[in-house]
Length: 328
Ligand code: 8YV
Image (cartoon, rainbow, N blue to C red; front, side, top):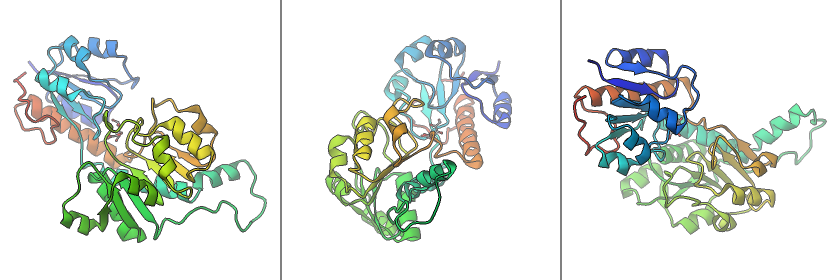
């Protein structure tokens, strides 16, 4: 008998078809996010779950689904998964790194440019019919080329942003990370390691690309925003919760920093209402990895992981590789 897997959100039909060659598949054609209770009910008898970060994978869910062996996530950041609880129960967790790195870095750079050059403000002004004449200081922003790019979190995506800044825009790149990169990697990127306070104080454009953990919760709050330049921009393509959105909205309103570009929010898809009132913030709905090719590559990699893990193969991108999946 084929193992059973649940695909929690709509994915390209070709990916579902591929999964059907190996598994009995239940998918989610309606694409609505299932409640924890509904997810647990649908997972009964399933050995595999194809998940996104809409699904919370925690101890109560795992305990309610004792047959579950593999959670294959179509996502690089897996803060929605209690990995320790999975490991303790012999559940393999996989994610989809690398395939989204360049696409996500492109988007981070675009959001930073849009915030610095006030593109969304200009677009809204046009749509309101308020462009009557040219004027010397209309929507003057700050330069990106030649400015100091600060990166908090220097993993794959942070490094891809550093390359764009240094090579494409002649920026001076500084970064802060839990661990410092090897000297030769720093030299290749043209990036200099600094303490967090120096990063905050020196950056003209600060981009957040760190994982969300208990330690990074509100890594940027009122105190950190107060250390930034009034002319600086802040871009968050990492996770909601890394920034204290209420503190950020206040700093933007009081122009203690110039502008922000945000793709992720605390409690998304809800937004802090104060952000919606502000002109100097560019808001996007968690789409940094959203190109046709990259979403497809992420779905294929998640499927590769699920198939390998449940058919005795070697999953390409495990999060807890110490787990040995029992044959289904
Ligand atoms: C996903 C992401 O689109 O990979 C991540 O960490 O945040 C995005 O690329 C989203 O989380 C859906 O799973």
